[in-house]
Amino acid sequence: CIFLLISAWGRAAAATYLVGFILLVICFALAIIAFAIDTLRFNFIRGIGGLLFVAAVFSIMGLVIYPVKFSTEIEMTGINMFSWAYGFGWTTAIMEICLGFFFCCLPNYEDQILGNVKPTYFYSSP
Image (cartoon, rainbow, N blue to C red; front, side, top):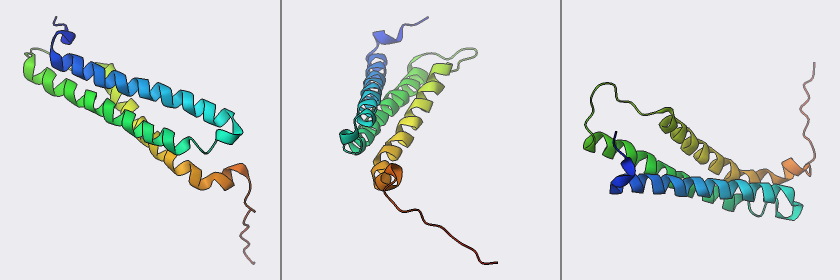
């Protein structure tokens, strides 16, 4: 059993993924604050989306460093596979990217969300 945080790449992978996670928690808190206060609702949203993209970059850096260095530096014998946490990390990174797009595009539909647009009805004649 080898402790991965002894090596520099293990600490780098852990640190970059941890920074991405901290940015994700900050985005979550800012989103709650932005949607709770009406005057801030659509002012912070694009900034939160940009911060989510930055968090995704840090998460992906950590998720790429780990398997590359793990498979080159540690002898693979028997059944070697990454745990469910590695798959959870990739799921988190993909969700950060999707939420970044969502938060960046959300202000374009501000009037529709707030109900300020007159509804359009499509009629078909028989």
